Length: 312
Ligand code: KIV
Image (cartoon, rainbow, N blue to C red; front, side):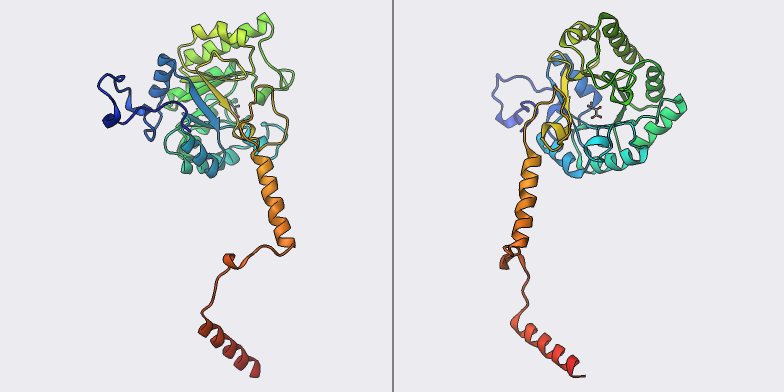
């Protein structure tokens, strides 16, 4: 399934059909920062998902999403940590490099993990460069406004595109009072707005809004000219993102209110593995068609060889 209707090939278009749009909209042409900006300008929603390995990247590619984020949510969904905080740069780089190997078309964004960019501009630039050089990411994402705004600016000045992330920022959830929606008071909503505007001012090419009341999003959106990708921020954003394991029903941990499940893959995985174990225990697997054969004359030759070895 494609994220949006793709343009018909030139030969299939009638004379009075719409003029050809930017070729970057055609599947197979890599998504760029300018094609994302164009989606916003044209009011075409942007579809973004997370991916953490080669097979999930291939799924994202075939499904035709616009942006793939190697999110630090990997800490919980694939590495089994209790939060996103413990995941290391090395772990994220290994996952991002695997995603890169499976991805051709969507823009690939690597999430800078907690503790890898906050200390100084130098630290932020050095970490971002590793995501580009070692893992092949097109861009990086970092969380929060405040001191992260300067870090974003430094990374952008070093030539690496940055995606911001405001509202519920899981890396600092403890300081925010837990995994709860942000901007429910006028003051906090103003802070979220100011964070978003500062990240835009610093040059971020897009900003994630996480767990923000839809009313707040509605009020901020007219002030943002870069694409805003929402997750639990209502329908007014320029696009939506969901975590791969949440939307496909692979992760069996707590699901936030904004998660919509589009499949129950975990149930199918458990059922498949149960059926395998049952087949092994009842000797239904392997069946003759799963094995290899030896030509009868070679089998006889082996018998003779074994017999002569035993006689020695
Ligand atoms: O880590 C992640 O998956 C994210 C998305 C939820 C935006 O930051």
